[in-house]
Amino acid sequence: MSRLTPLLRTLGLVRTPAADSSSKITALRASLDEARQSTQRWKARAGQLGARLDECEQRVAAGHGAAREAAARAQAWRHEIPSPAAVGSRFAHRLRTFEARTRLVSRADRESRLVDASEAYRSRLASGPTAADPRRHRMTLDGLHWWVPVRNPARGLHEKWVRKQRLPYHGIALTRELTIGGVMLDLGAHIGRMSIPRVVLGDVTAAYCAEPDPISYSCLTATVIDNGLRGAVLPDQTAIGDVDGTVNLIRLGQSAGFYVAADPPPGADVVSVPCTTLDRWVERLGVDLDAVTFVKVDVEGFELRLMRGAARVLACRQIAWQFEVNLVRLRGAGDDPRDLYAAFRQAFTHFIDLNRKVGGARVRPVAELDDALRYIDPDGKTDVLLYSA
Image (cartoon, rainbow, N blue to C red; front, side, top):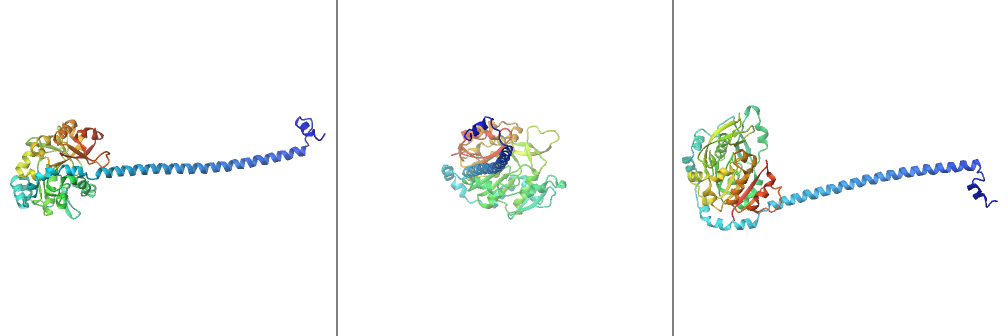
């Protein structure tokens, strides 16, 4: 019978005593409690592992981000490395103009020619150019005394703008491989931030500056005189375009902002200023074009007009040109970016986009310029350095 008992119990033919059933239920409950506790421990462990996994994924993502940032920085650094090939391609042009660039021309001679040629400069000298003026503010940067425009002195809008002013050392360094060692033409000179530091550093022997805006021009002349730079920095008040005459500048609300537009909007703050072509301007000031190595152009959309009046200067292949390309301003002046790019292709062989965030080679054939600048369309801007090999 004892051997059959388990089978009979299984078949329900033998009944389990109540005490035995109670102990089994207690055992089962204990097993269930243990299973629940074990499940909770595993859930807690799984949560910890999940948190660690999330942390690892975040670290991996951060690592990828850091790697992308490092790659972008490396790309920017590579894009800013001077090109030995570009320097070499300019050697023959510089050799041809060596005599002109090393010919001694006194500051007094340059100053005298400017005084004879520029009525605006004579007027500034006669009126006491460094006298107090509520439209101007005097500040000091790296030992130089600068005069900066103030459009709305009563509202104090210039203060933030003044605090942001810095000398453009980075921009100067970006162009040095092609621009140093001669005379500079600064077209759209504003207050001289891009030309005066180059003269002081010795990158250029002299800078001829064209600035049309009366307030900016008064600041430029005051800075030149205040720092003893007469004859080295030579400021004239004129716009540079494709005709002799006058053009209308539209002043903006912030300090020193203005541009030329074909049709000024109603209510705009407009000032009429003299205009001439670049070829006539350099002739009037007696500039020896063989001594010129660098032209900086920041004329707020008037770039194509300027080039149309600069055939003789553009023919000087030793000159490197820096243009600010601002598509909004260009279209506002009534010109098409495609026409400007075509003029670049006709006048130059190579270019460098000075935007340090762009990829690709530093020096590129000018035939690639349209595609290279597509990223600024329709309303962006950049600076390009153009030259002929």
